[in-house]
Amino acid sequence: MIENSKSGTAPSKAADIVLFTMDGWMTCITRRFQPTQKAARLKRNVRHQILIVKGMKIYRIIIIILFHLICLSFVTYAGQKEANFTERVLAIPAKNFESYTFSPKSSLLSRMESVPSFVLDYLKKMDNRPDYSSYTPSESERTLITEYILKLPPLHQNILKKRLISIYFVNNFLGSGMADFVLSRNSEIYTILVFNPIIINTKISKWLTYRENTCFINNSSEHKIKIDCGEEFTGLMYGLLHETSHIVDYVLHYTPFVEPDLTKINGYEVKDSDFVQGIWYQYRKPLREYRYTKRKQITFYGLNDGPKINETDAIRLYEKLVKTPFVSLYGSLNWAEDFAELITFYHLTEKLHQPYKINCHEKGKLVFSYSPMKFLKVQQRLHTIQGVYSSDKN
Ligand SMILES: [Zn+2]
Image (tube, rainbow, N blue to C red; front, side, top):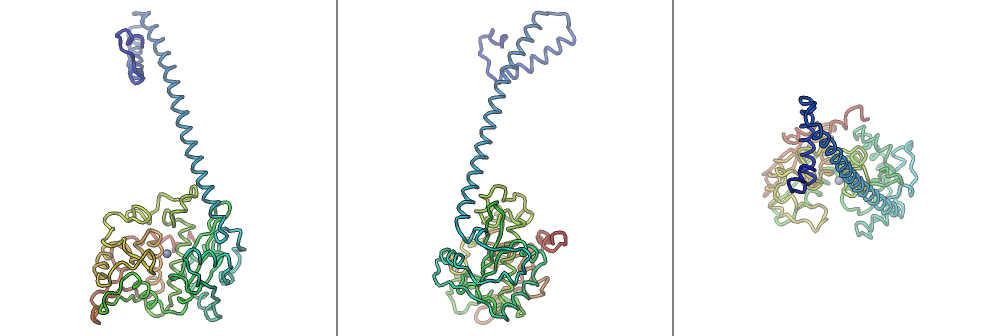
């Protein structure tokens, strides 16, 4: 610093660091090879170093303090955000674990209950449907429900025992059903299942054909889309597989998060997910190569101002879907639906030995038919769901 001042240039901090390194090195050379020369200069150099070291210490201390202040503000902000979110959720009785009675030792069948008013009110408000009402399954329906639950992957059954509070049936419920999270005060995730009772007795192929057609504007009487999933099961098997897969995902994080709101719980989001790797860029955004035309216009059950796609464009849409790793149009909506759909159709075809075909008819003739589970891009990602069937997770 002193040497530089002589040259009339005020040294910057960056210059100090360079100088320190240079002088330090020079001093070292001097000490090693010329121990007796220019003692005064050596003394000056030592003093020079002490001054710069002091300068650096202050500089470093300021940086460290600033760094800690920034970190602290982030932690405080995240903590505040989490607390606000948790409080907002807990204020809704249907989302608050303390509103329910739960025993992980009870049988799943005993958790099939009539819908309490606080849950019914919540559902009515959520879907703006005053016509929702509780449905009580008959004895034979309860037997069928139990039988189907026993056909779910063992991991699903295990997670249900630990985290499923109740199974409800609601008349006129929009869609097949819904898995919803319920939060405990320590941010533990529990769940409830809500189903449309119509799926209990409607054949699975008929129900899935109905669902698929809600995606299209019926602009031609000569075009028909049919889903073939066999005749052995009813829509309930589809509903149970799909919704309980969401529960498995809520708890075991096959995807980074099942719904974006959950990222407000500190530490809930998982960054590294084999399932979404190489397929999804964001929750609703697949990688560029899988963002096919009209994907953003896909809607179901009249939600989001749908349907928006003409039935006459259906084949062109499926021709795009064939080139992606998604097993259904529904599965290409977001990564959570992708996971639920892949498990569902994998289980239906590979474990329950049912067909799964999308068939398009024109003027009574079958003009397009494909089996999504047989496509290479779908097959190539099956290893990411094998954990569901491995014994170590059961
Ligand atoms: Zn779903």
